[in-house]
Amino acid sequence: MTFNILLFTDFETLDVFGPVEIFGKLENSEIRYFSEKGGAVSNKDGIKIDTEKLEMLSDSDILFIPGGMGTRTEVNNHGFLQQVKDIAERSNFVLTVCTGSALLAKTGLLDGKKATSNKRSFDWVKSCSGEVEWIEQARWVTDGKYYTSSGVSAGIDMALGFVADRLGIEEARRIAFRIEYVWQEDSKQDDFWKQ
Amino acid sequence: MTFNILLFTDFETLDVFGPVEIFGKLENSEIRYFSEKGGAVSNKDGIKIDTEKLEMLSDSDILFIPGGMGTRTEVNNHGFLQQVKDIAERSNFVLTVCTGSALLAKTGLLDGKKATSNKRSFDWVKSCSGEVEWIEQARWVTDGKYYTSSGVSAGIDMALGFVADRLGIEEARRIAFRIEYVWQEDSKQDDFWKQ
Image (cartoon, each protein chain N blue to C red):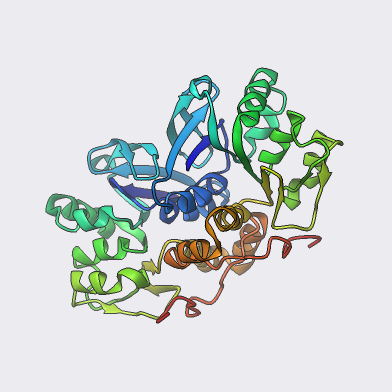
């Protein structure tokens, strides 16, 4: 499996690197990092990470879109949204964490589909698209090839859920055990809803 | 608070970026990345991150040392260990995750102190120093200015525990809630011991 991680300025740290920790534990997985313009992408946690240019990605196995404050800017970046739409359509699976679902929703590809996002940003995310069937109480939501998760650390649960769907729950449990992570296996169990 | 993150080739992704996610949520926190030689440091998850040279760090508020396969090499890198020892002595606090505690143990600074590490690598970690009082059943262990944690995701619990010790438990709970993370608040509660 090849995971293509889409970065932008002010991505949320754990949105990206929680799932990456899981993906990296799969045998023969490859992880690549892309951004609109390529080169170093930074965020408020002082991270500066090297990326490839998104247009170099001709087709994609798994596209991964994190959230973070940067999404507030990127939802208005129409050139970038068109690129995201193109590559999402050519991906076998598309996974988003937190407000990354707002970015994906803006492309129209979630229209008529179930999706979720961070509880603390839910009103803003909903305002990005009225065509999506937003599910508020969920750790993560699957609809066809689209996986969307709640806030930040929920991305780790979703990543393990994705592994379980592809390779069986024992493989997901093996990885969670190896990294000493208490996996919330039930995608509908959401401790952060309506608190 | 300034967090100085020490990186080396093949650091464990989530060891670093779980705690960084927490530290970055503190008001006025600064996060910097260092490595022995400076420049890009990469790992098996395709991450290439920009760092400063460790010798540029004259004194340190909080020093943070992750684990990962890279520690197996670095415990034999005597020049690096001497540098780690020097800066750890000049730090107000030193935090390690997973096999990062083996690296710190090799400097001798944990001699006679309580510490823990990843359950899956415990025998190897213990073999790095017989002078440390290794605690097997613990999510994380505090001894004076030294905080050591179990495997990978336990680093997030420890980071929140560190925040609680410095700024109060409500601040730690606020951050956990914001990132939708189910924090194991009890450092002694270890689901991964003897499994």
